[in-house]
Length: 178
Image (cartoon, rainbow, N blue to C red; front, side, top):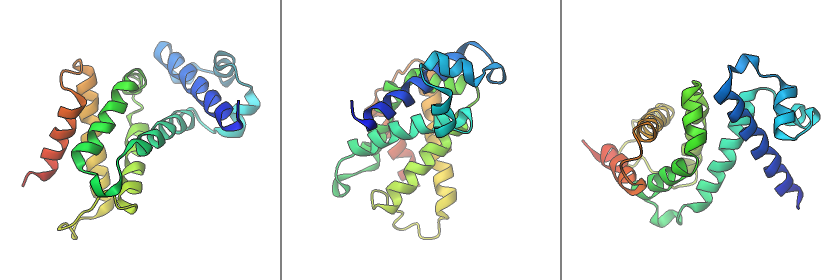
């Protein structure tokens, strides 16, 4: 196993162990020793890579977002509905993670992660705010993150009645409405 694969495996084990613990007990009662034992990693690993439990979750979500970015089509063919469809496909694959984060009040981790991805997409030409020059990009990212993360929360909590494609088109329709 390569160093990158070992790092990915340790991060996944640590984040899954943390999610399992958060699902059964309050965060302030979880010790780092308990987390490391459940994840099968050393305390040295934890302290080398993380400062807080939110760091564990943020890094795991960042890793999943990198996978999302790699799944996007070339810039020239990217459309909002396609990008959002891929996002909702990822949300479904990671539904357990997302539902636990919502349950324990950690949606800020999802909001920040979504915002980081949107900034990346904007700066690399995937997203254009053409005709919207007066829009403050930072507020736009916060607005979009709040809207999409809250839509994904409702979608998951109500039983995923729409397909990821339908959700992607819905976001695109909302954004193009005047």
